[in-house]
Amino acid sequence: MKQETYETLDYDIIVIGAGGSGLRAAVAASEGSGLKVAVITKSLLGKAHTVMAEGGVAASFGNLDAPDGWETHFYDTMRSGHFINNYRMVEIFAKEAPDRVLELESWGAVFDRTPEGRIMQRPFGAHTFRRLCHIGDHTGLELIRTMQYKAIHTGIDVFQEVTMTKLLISHGRVAGAFGYFRADGRFVLFRARAVVLATGGWGKVYKVTSNSWESTGDGAALAFRAGADLMDMEMVQFHPTGMVWPPGVRGILVTEGVRGEGGLLYNSEGERFMQRYDPERMELSSRDVVARSIFKEVQAGRGTPHGGAWLDISHKGPEYVKMKLPGMYEQFLTLADLDITKERFEVAPTCHYTMGGLRVEPETCATNIPGLFAAGEVACGLHGANRLGGNSLSDLLVFGRRAGMGAREYVAGGVALAEVDEAEIGQEMERVLAPFEREGGVNPYHIHERLQEIMTNHAGIMRSGEILEQGLQKVLELKEEARNMSIQGSRTYNPGWHAVFDVENMLLLSEGIIRSALERKESRGAHWRTDFPDELPEWQKINFVERYDGEAIRIRTEPVKEMPEYLAKLFTYGKAPGLVKQSEKKEA
Ligand SMILES: Cc1cc2nc3c(=O)[nH]c(=O)nc-3n(C[C@H](O)[C@H](O)[C@H](O)COP(=O)(O)OP(=O)(O)OC[C@H]3O[C@@H](n4cnc5c(N)ncnc54)[C@H](O)[C@@H]3O)c2cc1C
View 1 (spheres, protein in one colour):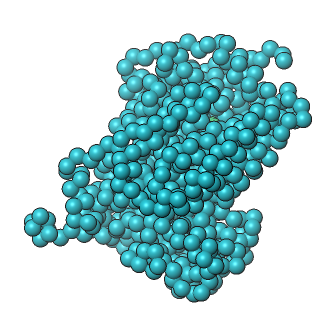
View 2 (cartoon, protein in one colour):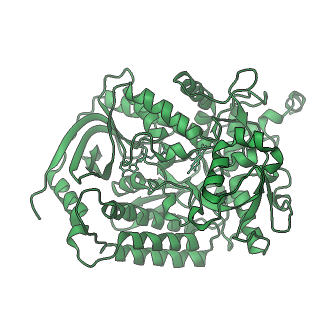
View 3 (cartoon, protein in one colour):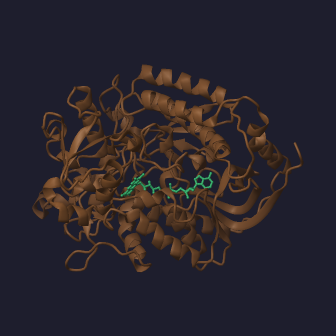
């Protein structure tokens, strides 16, 4: 192999990821700090997965339902997370979300409005009140548009189409990250005093998914290899309503906004089957419940022709549907030749969100590696066993900001740039180029396809010990096979080459998902085990934490932190705080 070279760039803080959390972190790290900050993305600025977000951003303004407040948002989020959330993260989140949304508005985001001129809020599954601030059904796009404009004006540098393949650690703290330019394969070393990971989730490990091509879990895998802790990896959200037909669009999201705006679910017998599973909340039950309900209906032989349920919003009339759900109207018309203002359509569960991820401190988003921070979907703790719709976008704003501030404070502590080990860089360049050297090896796309098949069949919506064990064996065998991935062509715009690293990351995280799923011997939120169908109180006290030593994944339990009295008492009435009358409070 010829002598390889690399460019070295020095920064105070690098943010890996240009989605909502990355951009918010960059603003916090850069604005008024005088620090040199870079944002690095493997796609383009403005193209991150976050742009796909549709339904809205949850914040308890109470613009339409006055009794809403942070306490009720806290209550809903803890309940939906089945109480394995980090209560402190939820508290910070529920209290700060409204300020972050207003701040976004002050930076130029144009929200839909009530007739009185307040931010419009729509209902969403398992939110007690109308809480989702939205811009039609393209909220993520507006969020990114606003934030990238804000971020670049704080003076950050942006590196697009750069894939980071390794986090560098020196004397126990983060020293930077190494990667390559996707356009021509040039290597680049970013030395940094602090690193914020904002690389999103890993929904691409499943066959049917709403996620973009970016969601391969790179940041989580890089940090895991570097010694960071992953938590609650068994918790993967399957959104109840993905498109089903035609086959080419299977998995594309049908926003919960459709049910929020009055869409109704039916089985093949014309029955509103949610009556059977959650008669109180019906279509607006939490995602785990609705997804499982559709799955059960199909299993019971009451599914639609292509294995899903019917969703119908046509009774709302064309004007309303086109105004409230313009993206959905277009999506079905263009992709399925179907007019949702006139016809019902088929939906089925699709992998949507990864609740597990890097374990972080609630106040600063610090991981267990000094100088390494994480926010957004790559981090863990806020959503517990099931994420509420709309809570991700506010998560990005609240904890993106906190991660940026955390990194900034860490750097202000006087930490210097760490020396990077030349030999380690040499080894990494060799590793990254190795697939070109192997001849007749396996194709990374084939490995990815098989991984998706395994994960869907063995660690999907329905699990059991036996199915998971089989899945684990298959993933371990596939991992062995993947050591021999090879590719052809040059380093110039070579998607097969990029796929090698995506696949390596997804294989590691898939093993993490299954190992954690095997340990949790109960059903809780998104984690449904047919051999342990009940939610058991003793498991509510436990999070599973994983660490990787380069050879094997070690798993341990950690106690879920107990809520202090002032938060625990929010649950004493058995209903949301905003629904408790003054008289009831006095009696208690
Ligand atoms: C269709 C759809 C609709 C949704 N609707 C909503 C909604 O209405 N409300 C809500 O709250 N949530 C919604 N979500 C969820 C929400 O959009 C995501 O959870 C959120 O956008 C994740 O943001 P993030 O900042 O963590 O990462 P992302 O937006 O996923 O960004 C990740 C960034 O990291 C970069 N990156 C990744 N790996 C590397 C690497 N190796 N090197 C360099 N860069 C890298 C990527 O290029 C990208 O810039 C939706 C999700 C989907 C799929």
